[in-house]
Length: 187
Image (cartoon, rainbow, N blue to C red; front, side, top):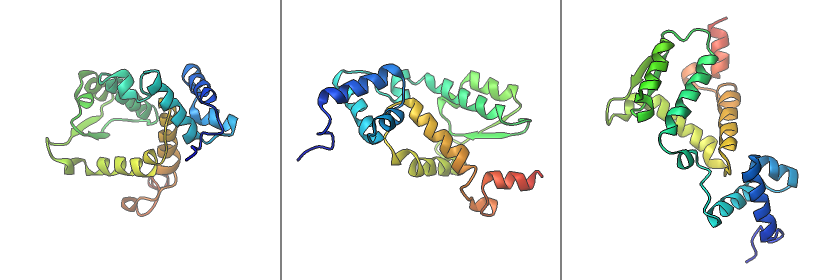
């Protein structure tokens, strides 16, 4: 059976993948420029990485576990920059080492954010966050293939900021989006 890639030579697929990896451009943008489905281009990049034994595009695999601290600190920094007053905000997380690190705890303390963690082996403490991540995975992550971490960051940012917070209705907020709820509550 002929593959969907049969109209593109192996050489063309590899050159495209090599260009994406070396240039740092996203497979999505390169695919759009070439008129090729982004999932196809992502597959070319994954195949190229495997063939030439290059590091995976998975952030955790490329950077190692210690980079989790940088990711969560960066995310917390982004969140802090969007809020006028962080005093009294409760940050609830699981018991991952990145959330128990000294640097992360210091960042919470410096911004007067209250740290809250699940009890060991008790996922119900964290059910709201678990529900959010399950929804994020089902509605965003699992529907696409990604070739680079930048594509993941872009999609997750758009999903959270534009859709989840801006448009998606939440039953706990009276079937309003978080943006609508905040506008009504704080106006």
